[in-house]
Image 1 (spheres, rainbow, N blue to C red):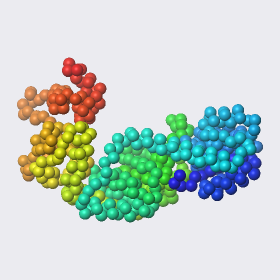
Image 2: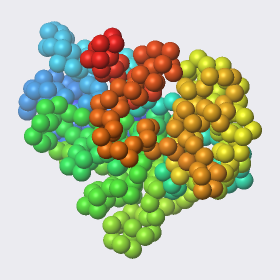
Image 3: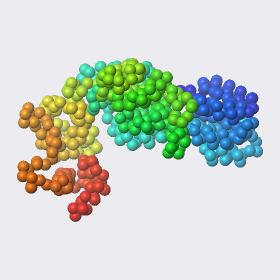
Image 4: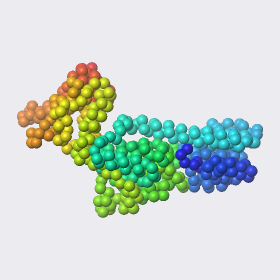
Length: 462
């Protein structure tokens, strides 16, 4: 593990507590000991433990009852129960309840140390698997952070320097400039926090669920909390917590976030225990946080704590020398994805790209290139493909302009088509263009295949 694990030894026999504690401390672990159920409860309510060694026979209570209580309060803590000779039946019951393993007295310290290492590996895999499941739902296309402009070269140089420290970083820039990709680049180069990259989109979290999403909660913490939940901070332990759109966090929740940023610790909702946040915190926003501070919508102390190092990504219109490199990268990527061998862009298309302001920045370029790949008929992207993709030349200044309405609206109101008929014509045109590839058509239209199939069946075209 990247950081030393915290161990709790619960046993009423002093020699066992002393020998385990001494052995684990020598290995570099942090160790607490308890001689009774009451002492164990007090410690467990205050601290987050990675592994607990728990004697099943305690002077003031049942070890099984204590195990059940602890299991309800934690998602990933591993429990190694200690049982006396002839009490194997109880130990097996503990395993069925959720304990990781058991040690039968008397046991040697080598076995205890080996079992501890296995338990820590189990905890690590548990969190990694949970993180992987979350990552797979984010549809991350793993597009790298690329550019050859002077501004981008300077930013990448700063990122390499930041990666050697454990500082907090604030990334600013317009929407679509690649703030999330820059954070991932920092994580890729990070020499300290090599654990998972976990993103929290602060603009999408319901305020009432913010604490639970970020900090996690224990079973019974609030109505509907039927099980314990791991928060994003714990998922990011040893890695990076990326707080995207930080400027959208409600003012009353900013104080709770400040404690995490400033003191690197938190408590799950419904729990009194303190958990260390062993993460690098990186925040991003398209807002001017200084102005938000002046308006009273963003805490000044949180702003300065986040803004230890500031990276600003300029909009694409201010670094147009990056356009050919980005456009060709996206072309290669989506040509392979959609199995269409395209070699490049015509000179005229690239001129139009240079003269366009790109209000949606790199994200807009990326989506446009994918559309161009889908609608292209030749091996080179031409001006004709731009029209099919929903762009035309402005009559005002000859630059690119997105077509907002796919069908002209007639002046004669009696000839206006019903919305359903417009939809039918448009879907059929796309189907024809894509040679009736229904899966690709559904993807381009932003609907699922079943919805498309139902519409065709309704129009007797199934």
